[in-house]
Image (cartoon, rainbow, N blue to C red; front, side, top):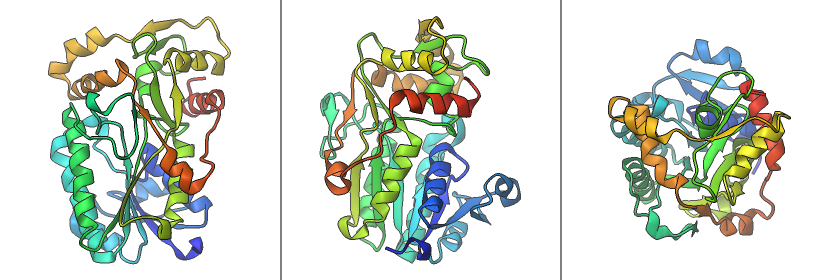
Length: 319
């Protein structure tokens, strides 16, 4: 593939994962087009992208923006988890319609929300998807629609990963849950039960893996999915201790996450309700087995934990 001849349309190009994928594709020689409701506001901070006006909910504007592209990166999500049920599937339908018309491949950053307890503690791409949450059921439906679209001219690639973190990822469990106070880290909260492992995904590594997969179209099925193993910690306390090391303050206290507060506020706050839904992922381990992607790509990017956490905190202004 000659990357310079390839164009990717990125939906959600100002968000954490969308911005990271756009940056990585540009670095690898792709032309990047980005959809935004106000291009004049988005463009100054990201001048390396071709900004076009449009809304992911508007199928016509997505189709126009997708003209001539090889890939549509569907990395758009409702801010603050709000109105998932009302927005997520219509936005995906706009992307699917554009991909069917243009023949582009859709890249969907996937999650572990698809899996319930019956999937086990370590899941591969063939594990059963019987989610226990509303958001998980929406995720499963998204993948079902992509698989159906692949029978009608579109192509789709899903790369599932754990909780995002990275220097440009403000909307994350690390930023909003573990070190939620702005400025210098004074305290750390651990959402997990003692001894429970957790799957994390450092966005620069994840974006690089996605780009490498996109550059192997001959090896991909019309609908294909891969797990990204990312940063696995056997006990999430180790992730909290990595934050201590990153800020060079070993005495920073590590507290249990205030789940009772979340439960109390959830009936009145949609973001808290969505956080409450994810509680099960902090009470039992769920590790993504990434044998398939390693078999195709060989080495997969893996920034050491301490380096990744340090870069994340510096990017967030929390160091």
